[in-house]
Length: 256
Image (cartoon, rainbow, N blue to C red; front, top):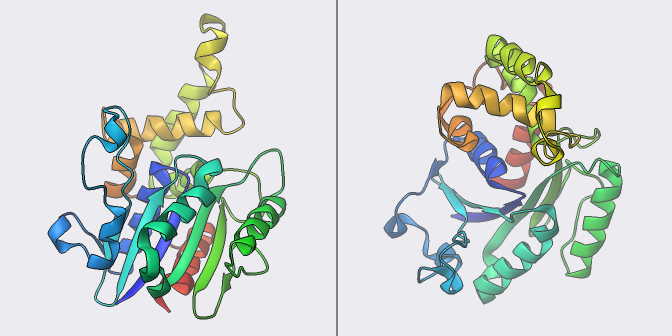
């Protein structure tokens, strides 16, 4: 069994990455008794975590196939990507030498180019002794494979939702148009500045439109449930160049 670790920004990234891993035949591990012993140091032994009833339990999603076991960890924000990796390596202790892959997924920051964000992360990770590839979307080969993928395509400003918007156009064109029309038709004069704060962000409108689609497909459910169960990743979308790019990155990083 080979072990790979991915750290991503949030729960939507976990769902999207996990859905792509399923196309390789990896299944999500649901029961602790089925989890590889290698990963058990990452599972908090008690609840509530650090005595905080409101705190999310910091446990990765685990996916497993016949020969590969992958942990996908939500850092809950871009600033926590490197600390999350550090904490995981510390929890694994000497067993960290068994890791064969380490990868990061993040959104492109609207205030800087993806290449600049990559250079900053690369320098930080190399300081901790992790050898990194030359550019985002590439995989460094060696005793341990490493890579950083920056949504939507390692070159353009945007987010995971930018990629999901492409998927929606292919799989749910009618719903996508309806969601866009709803967001475009909002009477913003009836909303306060606080109401509009997140919508006014650079990716706010596309995120709102994607939320409209998921609310139809999974009423009153979080969008990650729709990503996991509906056709965001499907025959209609796996042929898209940007989706294929993410899938190829995962294959090179984790499965070769």
